[in-house]
Image (cartoon, rainbow, N blue to C red):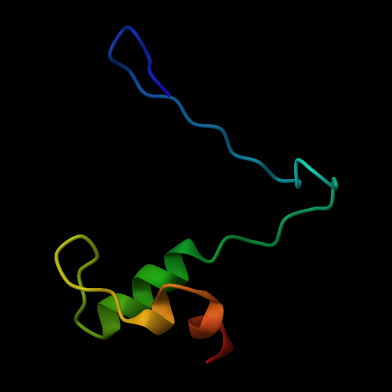
Length: 59
């Protein structure tokens, strides 16, 4: 979202905007921890395909 004063903006959603059900707990930190354990730096290294979808959550 463009903020004209140079700041930033974000919105955290807790419910699906289409059906209204509660969204699951974020797995963001777990994803970054798993990649770090493999020696992978997102943004610098290529992300393995199993970490580009939900497959990594199964392990």
